[in-house]
Image (cartoon, rainbow, N blue to C red; front, side, top):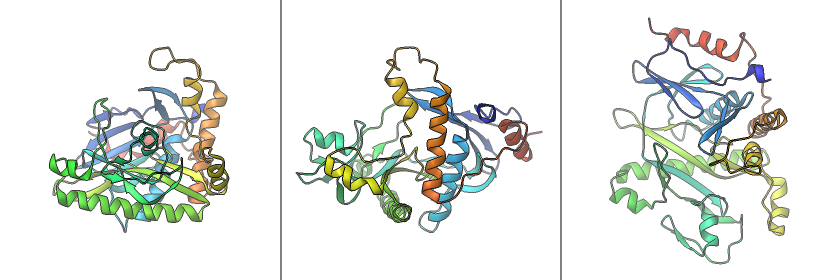
Length: 317
């Protein structure tokens, strides 16, 4: 399996490269962009490992959701020239990350559960009632927007009023992305429920074309951008006050954090069984969410050779 990973997609024949933590991107003519999902997994501000099939799973899972939500929100996708690659319209990402939450859940400093436990009841422009329990369903989903941090910055909580007053988005832009986000989340929850899953919360990124048209970008409803619980175990866990069962995609993160301070210490070598386990989590998530069997593309001498061949039409002279 390790021999079939895509640790990078550095292709000198492609123009205008930009290399992110897990994606390698190239800007083409006509305001288009190639986004290649590698198998790198990132945490603690560094690359921890490469996970077999991760890039293909996430690309194809996002494709599933883009296809099933295009009637709600137009997206940046033009085509899929390779199982790991999206050819998309080049957009300017809006400086606000839209997070929709349907439950009092989360572990980060910006999560509503973390803030609720601290005694806060007003957050992100919403007022939550007292007496809510961990992981309880909200009366209705809410949007908890944050600033879109760039260059290693940290996301900061925002309210709709702050977004408009500071000019991060216009009133018209905010109304459009918030309406579409709630509709996307409702579609996601409805489809997840049919698969025995609960879509707990998710984040959306939107960008604008040159003419100002807003498009859904990046990814949608993947395990990397969303929290899913298994519906069959939710009621028992809620009654017991424990965390509902979910796709534990933080297998490697938890393993590393238990053995060192990953922000200060050298990361220990991650054993293959942890890599294999993480790969299985992603594949299981794909199959549970879509109801489809995951079929890895094993063509080409290596995944990079296959990607190069499929993208050769975009090579510069």
